[in-house]
Image (cartoon, rainbow, N blue to C red; front, side, top):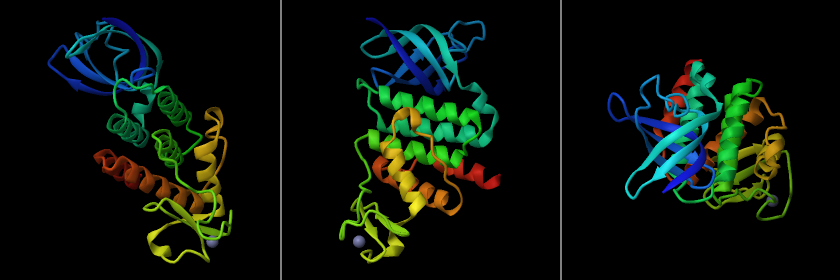
Amino acid sequence: MKTEMEGIVLTEQTADDKNRFVTLLTRDRGVVSCAARGSRDVKSSLFAPTQPLCYSRFEVFVGRTVNVIDDAEIIKSFYDLRVSLDRLALTQYISDLVVRNIRSDVNSSEQLDLVLNCFHVLEGQDKSPELIKAVFELRFSSLLGFMPNVVYCEKCGKYESSMMYYNILDNCLYCSECCTNKDSMQKLSKGALAAVRYIILAEPKKLFSFNISGESLRQLSECAEQYMLSVSLSHPKTIDYYKQITNMM
Ligand SMILES: [Zn+2]
């Protein structure tokens, strides 16, 4: 059966000197693996649209054991992100999380729009990769059905104080008076907590319409990463590589 799919190429695997397999995040069918025959040849019409970080329209023959890309055209390429090591490493970590956490044959339109939005902002260079990473981690976790419970202090109902503490293990927020084990929880300043709340609830188009820096950004970043890793139940190697690169910069 032939079908049209819109999606972004997340990973590629060389099959031989002519052929590749690619993994796509599609709008209607979740994560899909496809053979891209002849796509290693620069003269092939599949060469450009099946490159990693290309958002393309694909015509795919869906087979019982293998899906084969018949034709493809680029909608938008994020290929320029490849020239910056830290930005490229972040796209690889995001791709890895998507492939690990989204199944095939599910509607994944919101997840695809989130990836496209993050890559678009990453290309724009006016937000740091650290901030974009945190936004992706918290929003993606929420789209997977795991929204952090950060509305009130679990014990006294307080909405905000100069410092609050989020416990990933029991998914509860505590104010500084009610928190009994501060060292084992994620510390969130007023700014960091406001950012967490904003990221999980904002309209998709306004997802990046906030600013945060310094210690609050550091807390947001730590909380988002730990939360994502707990939701994902795995430790992708791509996060170690991303950190290695950013530590060198
Ligand atoms: Zn409290």
